[in-house]
Image (cartoon, rainbow, N blue to C red; front, side, top):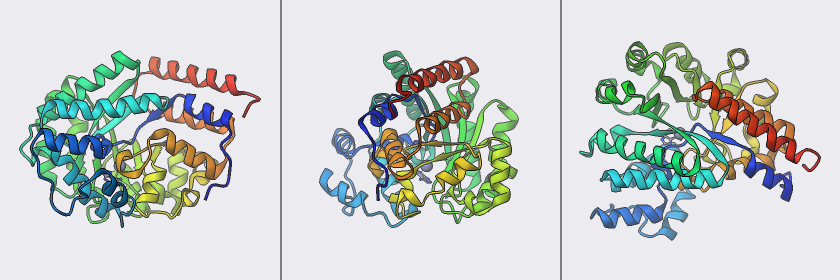
Length: 355
Ligand SMILES: Nc1ncnc2[nH]cnc12
Ligand SMILES: [Zn+2]
């Protein structure tokens, strides 16, 4: 349901526009090609109901009934990640694609509990991902931060243990944030108050965020703000149903990390056009545009920008504001933010009069 055309100039502008990604799960960047390679390399037999070929994956991934249906595949997919090098290769594939899409700063999620419960140590996971963050910076000049997520379908005690295991990585600055993901509706934010408090007490500078308002209603968003003290919200689309919450997000400039193609693939909406993106823009609620689990949802960050453009037809001015909001909501230092803002301004000026 594309309404607006994406002219050649606009397409170039969107690619060159310096982008920040705040909502991508590294395990969700596991393309079927790498998944099958790693299964072979590590002698992993996938269950019979997992799609047996790359082509079958494409069909199955186009037919998720909802978030849980996707997650059931996502957890099987990640079972092929065993060695530190597997985590490194996975993250390098993502950083390479993100760089080609004009993404200059990525804050990436990972799910340590999904690996530790299979007998993989958190050190294997973090060391592999951290090595890739450093290599991508060296190769592409991009900046990258790791956000550890807790799985909300597991008890808070498991979350607390994971936080303990990650202590040295928060202390050394290898981990920059804490997030909360997995099945939303049955596991509301209040269950994790103690986990968030534990990190906040020990590491007050660590960024806090949580998935909320993807399938859960707007109270999941306000409770994440009130109880978990998060400074960002992942998804947050259901904030649209509360004027009071919208006013609060705007007043505090709390950024929502939106994932348009994910919302379509997981049946949150039928088409990107139905998302409240114009409402958020007009109400001054800051948001960034992200890919969530691009290997499963058929598009990386630029595909998501394009999908939004063809539905909403934002002007160059509006796109530059969206890019600036993404920079302001990032967890990099002020010097890096200024560098990124200057680059947005330069691309904006280059395309003035052309788009
Ligand atoms: N979209 C999503 N929502 C909740 N948990 C996730 N884990 C990976 N992708 C997710
Ligand atoms: Zn997500």
